[in-house]
Structure formats: structure tokens, C-alpha cells
Image 1 (cartoon, protein in one colour):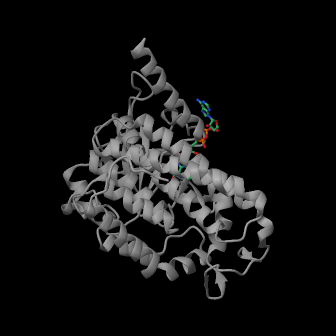
Image 2 (spheres, helix red, strand yellow):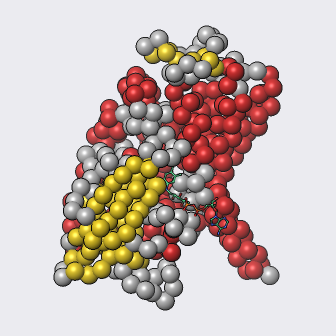
Image 3 (cartoon, rainbow, N blue to C red):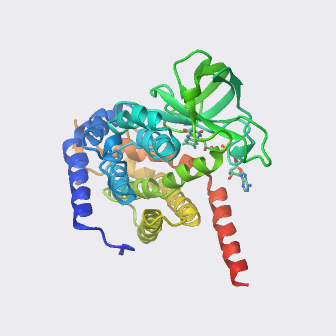
Amino acid sequence: MFTAPFTFTSEQERLREDVRTFLRVDCREDLVRTRRAHPWRHSDLAYRGLGERGWLAPDWPAEYGGLGLSIVESAIVAEEMALAGVPDSARVNTVDNAGSTLLAAGTAEQKAEFLPPMAAAERLFVVLYSEPEAGSDLASLSTRATRDGDGWRLTGEKIWNVGAFEADYGVCLARTSEGRSKYAGLSLFLVPLRAEGVRIAEVAGFNPETFNRIVFDDAPLTASALVGAEGDAWQIVNEALAVERTGVYFYGHAQRWLTLLTGFELPPRAMPEVDRLRSDLSAARLLTWRCVDLLARGEDATAAAAAAKWWTSELTARVAALVWSVREVFSGTETITPRWEGSVERIDGLPTAGVELGVSLSEAPGLTVAGGTSEMMLETVSAALLDDAEAVI
Ligand SMILES: Cc1cc2nc3c(=O)[nH]c(=O)nc-3n(C[C@H](O)[C@H](O)[C@H](O)COP(=O)(O)OP(=O)(O)OC[C@H]3O[C@@H](n4cnc5c(N)ncnc54)[C@H](O)[C@@H]3O)c2cc1C
């Protein structure tokens, strides 16, 4: 049984109820039909509706399209989105990542121009960090931005991006100078994705959402494309990633998939793992909300976030492994159709759970990699524990 590390206020509980009703009642059929047509794509009805209500970025100030609330309300929306099966990469990329970056480090003009349409679901942004030779060791990247009059020229290659074909801008990390260490001399730029010198191509991969490669061929950028101080991006990047790493989406996915799976009649041999997963999910939710609580109080959440990201994303992989291990429960039709006809919910004559459980098999492995791999999360946790141990000694 889950016990919250803190109690939610009655306003926060009401927000949760309102978001839940909107997603699970008002958007339910649209979500299922959209997923059937494009397994990874967000439903416009849900995404725009969240934007219209100020729920995409409830923690942003009202002048930028938010509700002036806190990260707790933002995490409540994230949790409800995942528990309702709403694809989340548009919000993660646009609001949690690019938006938090602009909110923390953007100029007044950048905030006024970009944050309101992001919060209103009118503009999508993506993240352009990883490179063919720089993922976990991101600071070793080789994309370069060089001065060109008042502006810049960008050259290099980014990979494993999701969403570039649908988005307007990418937040791109590039080297602008050689610093004292590899972490210095990196800068962030807002790059228009349909502009001279920018090429986007799909990359084959296991992920249900298409991966893209983006090549910058001496792409011109204006002076106003720079976000934050030149050469000082490393801390900004890590702070923005901390929000994604609270684990709240990963926990929600794992919980959702287990709930969908246990709607079917499972063979007795699956039940011990179902029970273990149920208790491990309670622990996962505690880790997640402990991390949100630390962030809400302005405390350092680096190690808590790494622990939460590791545990919750590994749980998604365990649930997906369970889905695979009981595949005899499903027949091998186009979408996964249950043999057991019990109380499984149907829309248009097809079971609603089928597509999502099928997608879980290809989505879960990537969740243990995206936003920082499990090995890197464990390294962060162990470094923090060693620091604590040294402080005690
Ligand atoms: C679904 C998904 C969506 C993504 N979306 C985006 C996106 O929108 N934009 C973007 O920029 N990137 C995105 N990525 C890329 C992601 O951030 C990188 O895949 C991730 O940082 C790992 O980098 P890599 O793939 O280069 O693997 P590598 O860093 O090469 O790692 C390979 C393996 O080696 C291990 N390893 C590496 N270094 C160490 C070490 N020091 N100690 C122990 N083990 C180590 C890793 O844990 C991993 O198992 C996405 C990835 C996925 C899976």
C-alpha cells in the first residue's frame, strides 16, 4: 500500500480528479483511436485540451501560460497522463525539457515569445543533445557553433532525436569554445528546424516512436538563438534533465501496463511476478514523489532523481517482460486481441488494451536508456553514497 511522503492539498487532489476525468472520460475514445492509427502519437484532443486548461505547464507563471503552481502540480499531471495512456514525449520535450531550459536561462524576449505557445500546445520543441559518438558522455560532443558577425554558424550531427518532423524548434547543445574541462565551453541554441542548413532524416530503430538524425551544415543562427550565457550550458542541461528523471512518467507507464495486463485472465505461473511488481510499483511511486518533494522544496534531488529514474524505468522493462511471457493469452492478430473475452473493454469492437500492451514490448527497453541509462543512474547514486560515506568518515 502506497503512503505518500507528504499529503496532497485538497486543491491538488481536485486538480488530479479534474485531469483524470478529462483524460479518461472526455478523451478516452480519441486516445484509443489515435493510438491505433499511430501507436506513439499524442492525441490532439488530449494535448490541446491540457494546454487550453493550463495543465501542460501548471508550474509556470501565468504570464507564460502556466497557473503559477508548483512542480507538485506538474508531476500530478504527468502521473495522470501516464496512468491514462497518453503518449508523453511532446510534453517531456516541449515543456519539461526545452521549456524548463528557457524558463531557467532564457532572455525576457525568448520567454515572452516561446513559453506561452509551448504551454498552450501551439508549438512543439525537441531536444538535440545526443550525437553518434556522444550519449552518456554528452560533454564529449563535437557539434560546433562558431561566431559569424552578430550571429553563429552551426555544424555537426545529432542522433536519437524523437519528434523533429513535427516540431518547430530544437534546443541544441554545441561546443563554442575549448574550456578548462570538457564541461566548460558548451552552449545552448534554439534552432529553427525548417531552415537553411538543417537536414532531418529518419533512423531505423526498435523504438515505436521514430528516431531522427539531424545534420547541421553551416546552418546560420541569429544572435538571439543563444540560450543562457555562452559556454555555460552544462549546469542548465543537467537541471532540465532532473525534471525528466523524477521517474513519474516511467512509474505511470509501468503501473498502466500492469493494470491493462491484469485485466486479462493470466496463467497461475504469472501471479508471483504480478504480486512482486505490485509491491515494487508502490516503492517506485514513493521514490518518484520523494524526488518531486525535494525539487518542490528547492533541495538537491540529483541522487534521488537518479534512483527514481533507474528503478521506475527498470520496472517498465520488467512489466514488458511479463507481457511477453504471457503472450499465449493473446492471439497473434494485427493488434493484440485477447482470447479471453471476459470484462476487457472494447472500442470499435477491438480491445482497448491491445495496442498499448503491444507497444510496451518495444517502448520499455528504450525507457531504461532515454534521458540517461540505468548504468549512468546507478553511477550517480553510488557517487552520492560515497560522498556521504566520506563525510561521515
Ligand atoms: C526512446 C529514446 C528517446 C531518446 N530521445 C532523445 C532525444 O529526443 N534527443 C536526444 O538528444 N537524445 C535522445 N535519446 C538518446 C539518449 O539520451 C541516449 O541514447 C543515451 O544518453 C545513451 O547514449 P548512447 O545511446 O550514445 O549510449 P552510450 O552512451 O554509448 O552507452 C552504451 C552503453 O554503455 C553504457 N555506458 C556508457 N558509459 C558508461 C560508464 N561510464 N559506466 C558504465 N556504463 C556505461 C551505457 O549505460 C549503455 O548501456 C533518446 C534515446 C531513447 C532510447
